[in-house]
Image (cartoon, rainbow, N blue to C red):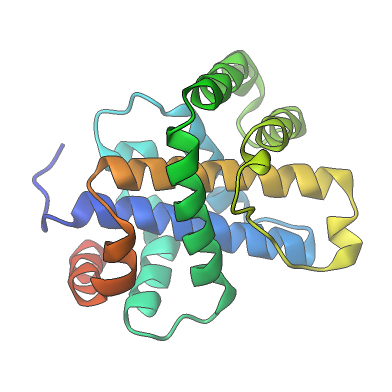
Length: 206
């Protein structure tokens, strides 16, 4: 791992991964379509459980450029989608309840590992994998509170394949929230340390 530019760099990368995933959730819910590369970054991160460095979870810092720019906007008070901070806060709160439930954590890990062969064979964005991850989220995390409520176009949110994709990407958002917490992140960072996080983002984007 290269030397961090800023003590917050790992936390910022994980939070950028969270926002980038949630932006895709919003896009899928509104349009029924995801950005292919960004979707792959999100879903690949779910299966990189034992990565040696934070950036490796996402395939490199460059893969998080969209999320880093969203985080920069958030830190500057210029978030283009005012639903993203609300969703991020809900996921951060959900993560706290999730990691306290050892049985659920194990069920999620087992469910992810059960898809490892399919990912190797088909890729993380294949419908078979999306459906499995969506079902895993529905069977586990969706039962915790607060629920992550996603608004969008009813035409698309009425389609089973779209709902499965939304849930699969939400699972990746929770994965980023877990990583963020593991790197020392807290709710207070998200709410009160915007200036410090913004400085770290600028270094990563430079």
